[in-house]
Length: 152
Image (tube, rainbow, N blue to C red; front, top):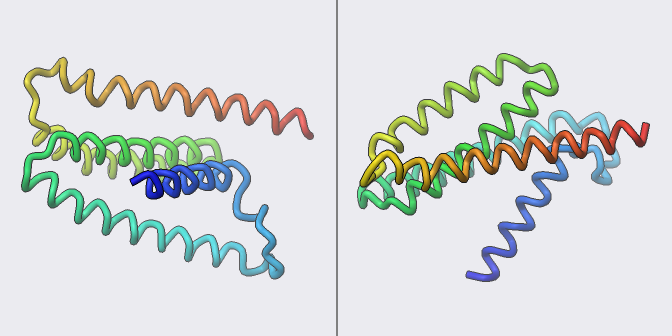
């Protein structure tokens, strides 16, 4: 379990690096293939993430597993918030709309099936961590953006 956690954290860190600095920081000799390569990587990640959501989602709904549903919500929210923020920052507004639609399509059945004792437990279990993540992430973007502009 420790090994899996460490590798996952490394993956998250590289995702943050690529989100802010792009894949152009890698030693790619032929820069002309960079966009095609990025597209292939994005497609591969979407395939893997989609398969993971499909398989984990089936288990979570079948077993009505509150913990798995919460973890899925965290992953989906972080994915779409980060993607949406970068899309807005880069002016790709149609994708912001796509992210909102996909978030709604994924989150609605999770919320509907989430075994709640009360709405307060949903706020405590799901919304507070999601809002905290968004606050921290947006703060990091502002900080990193300031650092990048100072370099230029």
